[in-house]
Length: 126
Image 1 (tube, rainbow, N blue to C red):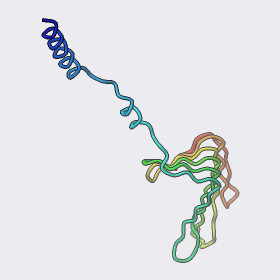
Image 2 (cartoon, rainbow, N blue to C red):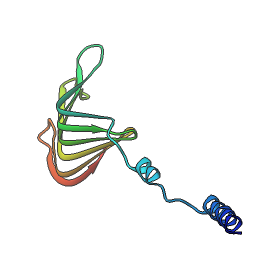
Image 3 (tube, helix red, strand yellow):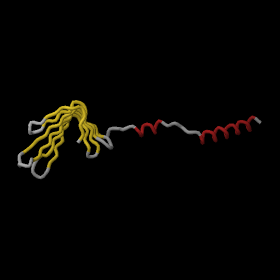
């Protein structure tokens, strides 16, 4: 008799455990972003056939699967104006986030243009 009650209780417990939901910690870990690469004191150059067109300097860069985050970064872009004179634009910020082709500058954004154009703001987007 006692064995029969024990077996039925095991059956009921196993059926309940099959249909109950389990809150797994592994699912919560999959949702968190993990850094793929981290660079400290880095400089990146963008080249064309003739010259350097852009320089990106940063104290720290963290690359995720869908975005890049830069801390204390500076973008220096070089190009030509309509008069074929060389122009360089410098944009620096405390935090820079790049998603696909969009770049967002935050906190102490400074822009200095070649033609004596400069401004300071908190948030800017390219």
